[in-house]
Image 1: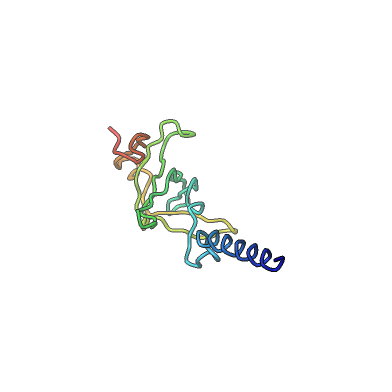
Image 2 (image 1 turned 45 degrees about the vertical axis):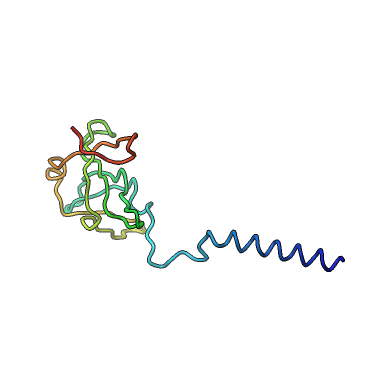
Amino acid sequence: MRYLKSSVLILALAAASAAFAAGTLPVIPTDSVTVTMYYKQTVYDQADKKLGDVDDVLINRSGQITGFIVGVGGFVGVGEKDVAVPFSAISVTTKDGKHYLSMTESKESLTSAVGYKYDRNLMTWVAAK
């Protein structure tokens, strides 16, 4: 009887751990990128001048990063304009152990682009009026 109780307990624990493990990754895929690499990071132009900060990361339903919302202009977020930038427009390099985001656009071209506002009801970005 003692053997049967131990066997049942072991089988129950094994089943529980297998069910738990099914919802986790055993290892992080090597081709993964993290949102942290982009979110709240500063974006620079080709002359290393600050263009703005990544305010949001746009991800499609398949889980692919498609673009970014970059806040340009303003001071400490006041007067800032949020613009949409495609994923392919931003390059990531590493300098002194830190990720460095840059793009070829100028601050003027970004500030003249269509602005967006986050709609909390729709839970998405919509063109600003």
